[in-house]
Length: 174
Image 1 (cartoon, rainbow, N blue to C red):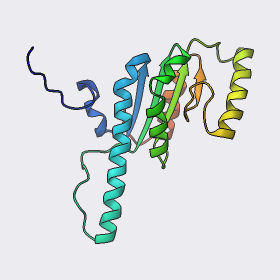
Image 2: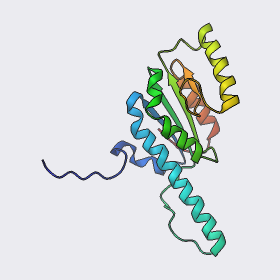
Image 3: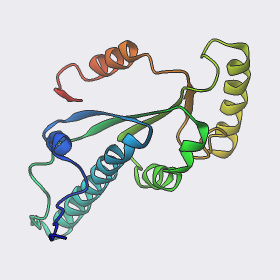
């Protein structure tokens, strides 16, 4: 077999996300894998920038480690999957990101499409119990993570509208 070299945790379509102040990341099923890599990269870059700022404040001279090409300051991650069991795939990573993201830069949403529709009485009951459990323990009962799960498909029109209203002067990378 020929020798293969791999550079970076994500494919070519996702390489430009660092150019945007605000990014919307969407993953469907196992297709969330590259988006999870980007989410982790955003958290790591922001942490490195914070560390550089602290060092610069202490020494009065910047270390120069920060990546000046990294512009992302806010990210929205939507993961849509059919089965509740899929949440196990990235449970550890989602919790790790939630733990590292002390400034709440990344807003994460899990959507399970095989559960009853959002307005269904059974969904309303699950949602009520879910909210109580999340408030009490900090863990979502559906996904088992710190990320709240929603039922049915995302209302993309509302998602786009909310992001546009929150970031009127920013270009949003999707």
